[in-house]
Length: 336
Ligand code: CP
Image (cartoon, rainbow, N blue to C red; front, side, top):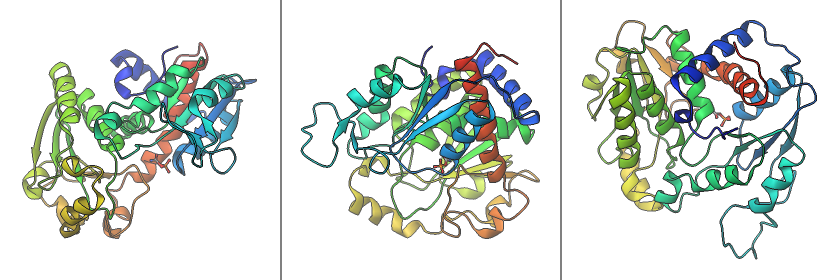
């Protein structure tokens, strides 16, 4: 079984089958299909939704989990190859992954960007190394460059909202955040919308284009799917006719790993806090999406999050259904 590292690992047929199965699981959540199976959950970074939805999902399917949180429930774990381990980490992934794989039928791992080397982070070298060390099925629960379970849930959310695949207008917008954030979520959302064949606008201030490899990768997907991708820094124009505004913050690529210079570029951009006024030129009843967690009144105003266009709770709920479908697909013969 190939690891699930990015949404692009799925063919359109398999993706549609997973979404159909997720819909069945939403209607009838409890099965015994994973009885006797253990899923190892390794969280190198904090989580609310990903941890709770994976843990609940495995249990609703009759299985159980072993949860490892390095530095709390286990030794701190080093991820860098060739590291001289004279710091706090007492364990290396090169032992930790194959050891855990002996206790579990599948491993699911969260390991965020290192934030020091842009090219290594964009290549997702750490999660790919971990997946290669795993002899059992492996699921990426958010790495340096991808959050495929979120992207799968986002696709289902767009289906739930009846946003069309072709002709659906999807705006991926940068939003202010006090810190430089990695590219996993916006890159995955962009690839998801491109795979879905949508009419995509990346709305961002000057200096905050997504990294070139992320954009060219999405353009390549669009070439096959029929999606269209454009970029603008003009909010009014960018939001014209939008069915969905998907907000996320990310680091300025040219100042990656330069926090002080990056902060100077982003600090004047506090007005990139999504408000109702952003939707003036959007389609009627346009939806607002965000992966959560979100900083209220910094990244998004209360009026949007508490209003009828917000789909953020539905998005988080869909994490449960799509991940259960993925587990059945990877660990059993069950299909929709
Ligand atoms: N969206 C998401 O992955 O949430 P958590 O970081 O809380 O898991």
